[in-house]
Every structure is written in C-alpha cells, then in structure tokens.
Amino acid sequence: MEKIKKVTLDEIHHSLGAKMIPFAGYDMPVRYSSDMEEHKTVRENVGVFDVSHMGEFIVQGPNALDLIQKVSSNDAAKLKIGQAQYTCFPNLEGGVVDDFLVYKIEEERYMLVVNASNIDKDWAWIQQHNTVNAKLENISDEISLFAIQGPNTIKAIQSLTSTSLKDIPFYHFEVGSFAGVDDVIISATGYTGEPGFELYVKNADAKKIWNAIFDSGSQLDIKPIGLGARDTLRLEMGYCLYGHELSDTTSPLEAGLGWITKFTKDFINHEALKKQKEAGIKRKLVGFKLLERGIPRADYSIVNAEGEVIGKVTSGSQSPSMGIGIGLGYVDIEYAKPGTEIGIEVRKKRISAKIEKLPLLKK
Image (cartoon, rainbow, N blue to C red):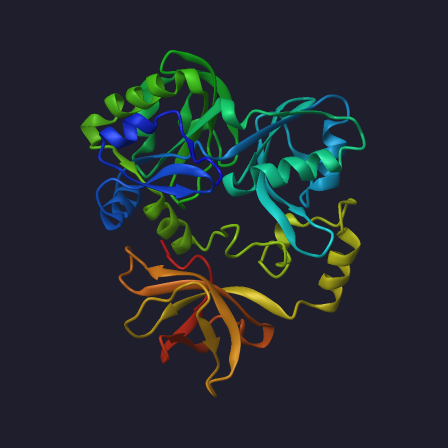
C-alpha cells in the first residue's frame, strides 16, 4: 500500500481539531468545524486553505517556452514576467492529462502548478515530451501553498507585506517579502470565486507564515478552511475538478475550455482537437440547479422529459450559498442550452432540474 504523505503543517491541523482524510496521496484537512460554516466564512469574510499537496515543477533554460508551448493548450508566449495562465496538458486521445497553472517567473524560468493526484503522471508526461532539453525540476516536496480567500483578504494580510496587494491584478503575481520571509510568490489566484491570494513558500517557512496570517487576521475572525468547503465553493462557480469534469477521456472543448485551447500554435494533438471544434462537439459540460429538494451526486444519470438518459452528473452538492441542490455534468449537445429542463435520477426517483449559465452562483 502506498504510504500517505503528510503536509508540513500536519501537526498544526491536528491541533486545530481538523478532521483529516486521505486525499490524492496526502493526509489532508477536510474540515475544522462544518463545511457550511467554512463555506460561509470564505464567501463573507476570509479563510485560509492549506493546499500544500499541489505539485510544482520548474521549467527553465533557453528552450523552456518551447516545451511549455508543445505540451500546453494555451499560448504561454503571451505571458509577461509576473503573469499566470490557466491551461491543460492535452493527451494523444483527445482527453486531458491534467489542468494546471503556468507562472512566468523570469524570462527563461517558469513554474507549473499541477493537481496533487496527478503529480507523478504529469512529471512523467512532461519528461517524455521534453525533446528540446529544457531543464526540469520537480519541487513539489519542497513547497507549501496557502490560499487566503474571501472579501476581507487584503484587510487580513496587507500588514504582512510591503507589496501593495490591491495593485496585483487577477492572475498576476509578485515575488516579495511576506511576514519577514523573502522570495514568497504572492499570487492573485484562487479556486473559490472570491478575491484572494495564494502564497508559495518554502516548507521551512511554512509554520512562521501560517501563524503570521492568523495573528494578522485575528481581529477579522479569520479561520482555517478544509477541502469540503473548497469543493462546494468551486462548484458554485462552475470550476472544473480533475477526475470529475476533466479526465483522460474528456476533451477540453467539451469541458467548456475552448478559451484555453489556442489553435494559433502547434501543441500535442492540436490537429485532432481542431477537427473536433470544426465538426462540433457532441456533448458539453453544463451547470444545473435542482427545482425540487434533493442532492445530486457524481455519476447520477441526467435524463430528458421522456426519461431517456442524455448525460451524467460529474459533481453535485447542496449549495451552502443558495440552499438548493446544484451540479455539473455532461449532456448531449442538443440539451446544453441554459433554460433547458432536465431530470436527475436520484435513487430511482427523477428530480426536476434546469440547465443554468455558469457560474451557478450569481453575484
């Protein structure tokens, strides 16, 4: 059996009373109080996630961009130093190896941030396709990652850095001093739909920075947040989760990621994806809201008015913000239009639902 890894702050999470679960090969805090309370904290105030299970690869050298352009669907040539970009690794069969972020740190130095469950797979993939001899380094075990998210984020942490947080645009970052620690990547990114920042820090500095965040935010009642609330927060926004909305067999075009699939350059399997775009996709990822009481779950069937199966739920939950059942799923393209009424089969009972434009939570 594979040994479960522990994040650097494992003892702190236990001391805070976190319920820990195995997730993507790591022992991770799923909740500290309740998913509902933690979700509300992020939507209305400010909370902190330890997401140090995520993977980080450094790609550098004169051919770094060439390699990234080859393996990534988005156009990294457009990145300026201090910018981040959402993208994916297309596979050779029309699916997705993983979705990830690219950070341009220096002119010939990039950081890729990949999903924890795919670190080994992604590392093998990028090494396999590194025919241009870019220098690669897997620093996943050396980096801790904290996501501070919520409308009061800047109030909670601005005192810890001389970097003006309000002046960092969305999907941009600064490398600066934070809580007296140098070379922290302060990134205006997140997975909640709320304003916030993600901090990439060396493991040796993780405890100092975590404690400083909570000391600085104590007057705002800042709280630690687990993976349970992270999932409902991203679901309300319609953000994809690998292993649910994205997989080795889901096309980025079907997943609504045409905006990160740039045919202005060559990349792995771009010709097949271009043909798919020209021919038109046969199914599409959609968001939906239940019109009756119930909670949709992954793998539940989606049916039309005649009861015929037209798709499958990929993620579903009770929305803490709206108090109704919501979900994401793939449906046949003719049923994908917002406003279309569908049914979700919940334990042999059909529950009425309606397809909604994303994000599901309208602000």
